[in-house]
Image (cartoon, rainbow, N blue to C red; front, side, top):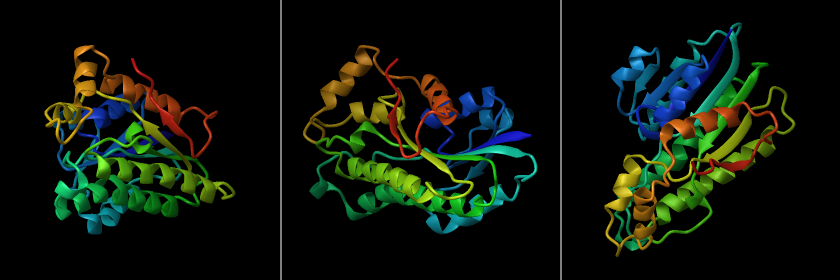
Length: 245
């Protein structure tokens, strides 16, 4: 018998922290990312190299993974929509149309598509199934210069809640959670701290978090997300947050 995790953007950052947490607990992991991490291959993670914004390829690649799974052996399935991008930090009128479109595609369109395929394919599997959408505190609070990021993450919160409503009376229902990992020490945070204050007025707060050692680390976040995934007391549709370290 086996538990299975399918995650996007697992090659580094928060995704890597999540994968490590699931591996420690004996989960079989499939990762879909733009880049392949050779260290993950060494520990048995099956990796699919794919630019997720090529949305016409998503169904083919996801079904390829699904077809590897044995219905008689799998006891728990988790899809984590983790891949995301901050896009360019600037006020909306300064952003080019391609950046806007690509940011929304990765942060919002991809999780919508993958969740739809996951729910449809496994609807008759009588096992524990969950979708975890990695959201952000920025989904609830507007930041100057983050219009696209804030909005795309807000859409993820509503996706989580609407799936929960739709699955509430379905047999073999999928449980869905949105989890904000907090401010995590990743490449994205490094990028944020390099911003021009004219484009991002809150930059000093993020610099201070780094200097004060107040950032979450990916490993701790991964463990917390694993715990939430396995917490039967959490209600489907919940919008959650990993508390600071």
